[in-house]
Length: 144
Image (cartoon, rainbow, N blue to C red; front, side):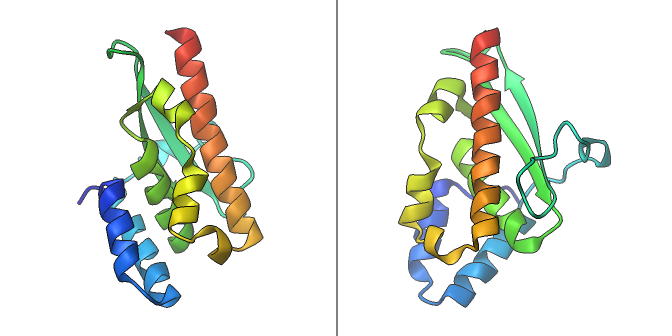
């Protein structure tokens, strides 16, 4: 089962009143991630700055028009963090590098009221994931 579209995730969050239910939904989102191959659990793909182990594998289609399109696979060793990875990838995967660089993921996290319900360590991890994805988008643009 693929990660739902961002609009569906936002709608589902709106239906959940209790934070325990929202955390359970995040865990369910994490289960929708495509599996990351064992070989992809390497230092090049590891996201630094996360308390939990997080890996993001980036695939760039440089021949796409109107510019490079990036697709991401991700994984984590923590259930809620895996859900945060899924949420982040629903926002960015399949987008052009320019769209990625112009998208403020923190607005989405604010809209879902996640920012105020994440521990500082998890917030730092989300920031590290977003910075990594944005750095990959910048690199893809430079190489285009």
